Length: 155
Image (cartoon, helix red, strand yellow):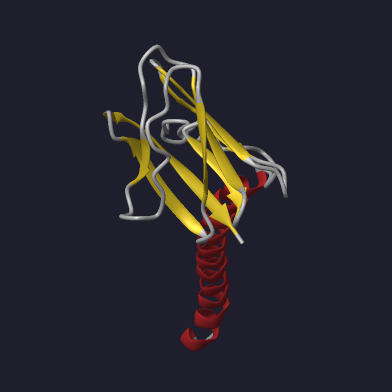
C-alpha cells in the first residue's frame, strides 16, 4: 500500500469530527442566547401589570367649584371661613349673587378694573352682579383681600 492511500482514510474522519464539533458549538451558543430571549418574553404576558405600581399623581389642592345649570344664576356665600364656592361657573349675562352669611360687612369687587363692584353687603344681606365677558374673572373682598374667588363665565 502506498503512503498516500492511508492519508485520506484518517483525514476524512478527523475532518468530519472537527466539523461536527464546530457545528455543535455554534448551534449551542446560538440556542442559548435564543432561549434566554425567548424565556424572558415568554414568562411575562403583556397583560401582567409591572411589578412596581406607578407613582401616585401629585396631590393638588382641590377647589370648591360649582357650575350653575344652564340658564340659572350662580351664588357665592361669604363667611368667616371663606367663600363657598370659591369658583362659580355661569353663562354670560347671568347673575351671580353674593350672600353675606358673616357677622361683618363684605365688599366683593372684580380684580379686573371696572368689571363689577357688588358694593358693601351688610351681614345677612346679598348683592347681585352680572358678567357678560366670557373667561375667568377673579374677585376679592375690598374689606378683606384674603377672601377671594373666581367667576367663570361661559358663552
